[in-house]
Structure formats: structure tokens, C-alpha cells
Image (tube, rainbow, N blue to C red; front, side):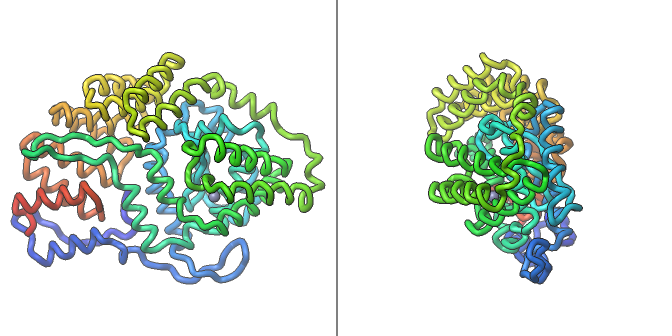
Length: 453
Ligand SMILES: [Zn+2]
């Protein structure tokens, strides 16, 4: 994850930093001034001039740098090329009809179990396998992708850019927290339910008006794409039911109860009035069920994972472990279930056992980075810093440019007794604009070592 406009400042680790260096460093960590605001631009939907915080170029570059990290914290795209292609094809039928047909749209199904979908401002979209299992037709999928396309076209992310967005980008960069024991030599990973942080951070701030506008645009696009408008009311009806039955599974964008009722009623009304003619179109159920057949076969696995994640969030770790064990009895080679089992075990300090599940996860899905990252953390906790370093280097190859990696590489060097290398990486980590617990830890280390004052 690179900053949009990295400042240039020569850093030397030859001696202690000057006070000026340090102030600059802290200023960079504060960071907000680094994003040049782009001022007025024409809203592609309304044709009006609006104040936006990002140029189109910045939307695309933010998308490119952020989306791979978020997709990975949602455990990567499912390893079902046919299903990913299908979802991207359905999206393609809408994107070409949108107000910004030339944006670099893409879509994939993610291994995450919670019920959600999201988009980055350049049009990189993720749809969780959790929500894919709840939808019943291609029309509903088109409504979902239409809604996300609406956010991209109305430039909702750009609207809220600036300080707030940068603060959230820093939040996305925050990774698993590391706490040191009293003697400061042993690192214990503190597991948090990470997978949802980034998406919430990027999406939580959409206003109700943004959501209404995205629904309205989404319905236009899906109808223009040839779908039955009832798909939108079907989707909203499903989400409204989810909000009632399993609120914990729903992410911020859909979780507001009064809003989900209102959105359902609006969609229903639009289908009956504005799009009444298109309601005679045959609903596309068969095609959807055909393409999601593989996913439906592992539905019990996904449901056990959902239960386990809810228990994890509630700190009921042994019970969570039971659920992930159940998920693995249904589908031994499920990447997500192996990673989640490892997280539940790590949180109970059963680190060696956890690392075995991570080894399995890595062999199931060698291209996905989350298991590699967690395995690096496990090996740090197991006092195998050389092996941990190898994992973090491998992680950086899979997901280059995530500043969080700099911190962990530094931690591995520190544990190997290589203070100079450790200081270098901690410093670069702070330079990336990192904030939070790890950043404070890095600052404390650099002060202890007299690298900074
Ligand atoms: Zn939305």
C-alpha cells in the first residue's frame, strides 16, 4: 500500500536523527496534508460541478493500491474461475451501460463468509461467498453489482476524500497488533477479527443519501442491462430479512434496520411504477443456480465458518474452534476454514497447531497472502525469527507495498538480534504514515536505540 504522493526526504541511519528529522517523521505519520485535493469536478451522473477530494486518476490509484489488500484480508477470490468469470460477466453487462463506462471495473467472489459486497472507487468490486449463497437469481446479483456501480459512478468515495479518507486508509493499513512481554523480547500476536476492518473503513461513511442514490442508479443499470427490476426488491428483501435474523453477519452498508425497510419499499415501488414494463422479463434463476452449484455444495462449511466467526467476535474461542473443526469435517480443503481455525488457535496460544493449519492453507491456495502473513506471525511467536522473516518476504512478493510488512520484517530482524536492520524497517514503517499500536511500538524502539530523540 503506497501513499498517493510519497514525500521525498533523505534518511540516513548512520547517526541519530535530528529533531527536524523527527518532526518531519511525525508530520508524515500525521499525514493528512499529503493528498492534494483536486477541487471541483463534474459529477458524471448529474452533470453538475461538485467538490470532490480525488481526481479520477487518484480514484484509480487508490483502488489499485488498496483493493488487493482488502481482497486478501477477505481471504482472496474463490478458486472457482468459472464463478468469478460469471460474476464479472454479469457486471460487464451493467458497466457498459453506466455513466462511466471506461472505468477499470472488475469483480470477483471472495472467500469471506459474512454477507456483503463492496467496491473501490476505481470499480474493483468484491462480493462475499456469504452473500452469494443468500441470493437466488442473476437479477439479484445484477442489482447488487448495479448498486456498487452506482457508488463508483456518483463518485461517493471521492466526495468524502481528504482527511477522513486518509485516516481510514491508515486504519486499513493497520494489521494484527503485536504486544511485547515485559522484557520486550517476546512477541505475542493479538488476534482481532481483521477481515472486516478495511471494508468498513472504506464504506462505513457512505451517507444514507449515498445509499439511496446508489440504489437508484443500480436499478437503472440493471434494467438497462436487460434484467427484471424485481431483482432489486428481491435483493433488498433478502437483506431486510438478514438484518432481522442474523444482524451480526451484515456489514455496515446494509445493517441499518430502518434503512433496509425503506430501501426495500423504494425498490418495490420503483419496480411497480417506473419499471413496470420490464417486470415481464423472465427472471434468471437457473443460470444463477447453475453457476453457484459448487458454492452451494459447501454451504454447510460456510455456515459453520459464520458461526465460528460470530463466536470469535464474542471471544468464545474454544466454541469457535469447534465450529471451524466442523467446517473442516465438511470440507477439508477449504482455505477459509483452515485460516480461521488457525486464527482461533493462535488466539488461544496454540501456536504450533495453528501453524500446521496455515501450512495446509498455503498448500491449498499458494497465491493467497493471508495464510503466509499469519504464518509469519505464528513463527515470530514460536521464536523462529528466520522462518518468520521468510514468510514476510514471501508475503511481500504476493502483496507488494503493504507498509504493515515493514513492521513485521523489522520485528523479525529484532528477534534475530539484528538491531540495525530492525531500526531501518521500523523507520520505513513510520515513514509510510503508519499510526496506531505498532507505530507507537516502533517509535519506542527507535527512541530506546537512540535512532531518534
Ligand atoms: Zn452502498
